[in-house]
Length: 284
Length: 307
Image (cartoon, each protein chain N blue to C red):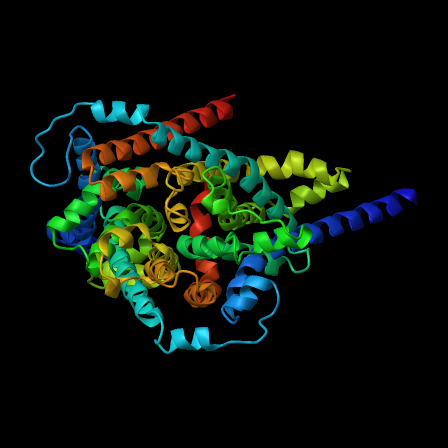
């Protein structure tokens, strides 16, 4: 009897502890986000006096001016981010799927060597290559152009996605390959009609990872884009902050708008983002 | 007859399967070229440039040997940057990962109400870009408008408050808090995925045998999560060596190099002072440090597994 009372008590203590910790962490995550959203609706005076209160008076003009394009260049930055990300994801998937397929399903003498060559790339973070990379882009005339960001982004994604996709392609049963061969298709036909349709989830995972990396990338755009007409959102945020110095209500409105696409993407693609980030780590 | 036709069939199948050189070039060529041109070549060039004194223009003539590395190792600011990277690792391992593990254990199971909400919400900061996170926290630390000083003046009216990002000694710690804020959710999510791979039956069996919560965690959950933990430790270390965006967005490593990291240091020498040779020696140093860490870490793990 006493033991069951004790265990009930310890269960209550345990549950209280769990909720308390969760609640505190929720607040720590939520308060900065709340400050950004609500701060965009405040006057500067209220922002200074009452950072946590609800906006009073409620000023929508910071947001509406940004959205109407009267202040800043939110839509242009969003468009640039979208374009760079779309090009990155498309090129990344085409290149990696093709190469990973060849390395997974076609037997040829150099296969292992080429795979290992791509694997070397896992060792090099962007920072190690960045100085010569910049000179390279300058020589190729890619500085201040979209491709100057897209191509290196794809290149640094290649090893990771080849590992991810090759592993999946290898698991596709041999019988399916024979079936397409009987129908008269070669390796490319097998790849196109059989492998790609079977691989949509893994391609989505690889694509989403490339998309998130591109969307948040700052280092490369910082170097490559020297003209604000090409700026992506992270660049735009830094630039806007530089230009609107102390108008923090305006800056917070811009920040909030810049967060929205990432948050929407996260809600829509959470499954794939989590799958991509945990695939390597959990399997070991 | 049937036998012969099956031989013919298997021959055509074999022929179809065999890829031509053209097919291989078509499939592998583009990825190979892009990867070589934008990853391998620049990395090799960085190794070469690090041996020269060079401003990025004109031919490489001023051979320097290993002198760039000598300057680098003796430079107090580089030492400071390296120390900051090391401190980021220490705090990631001692604060961020344990916090992530605790939260994963709390919200990683379906039994806990609201678990799905908490799981999703805690991951949110990781989805925001480093720059957005950095600028947001610049506001929170802002001496005039920010939350921190409002809290200080609420509890002690008249207190002028603090300006952490303006202080050479405070800026690093202020940024470290933001780093933990941003990344704990990533590691929590990885741990949750690991936890979900542990069969519930194991824990139930232990509980039936009378094991307490602490015992279940100590003897069942943690050992089964070991590989996942090892991998998060590894990525956390490698990631910490590469920190740039968030530091750049929160004051570019200044004031007085108070939050300098190796990559901000590299950026400053390479692109602001156009000292490509010296900057490249920083790049090589970062690579060597990462490589040494990886090898040592894997050796230690292998030894532990054997022992």
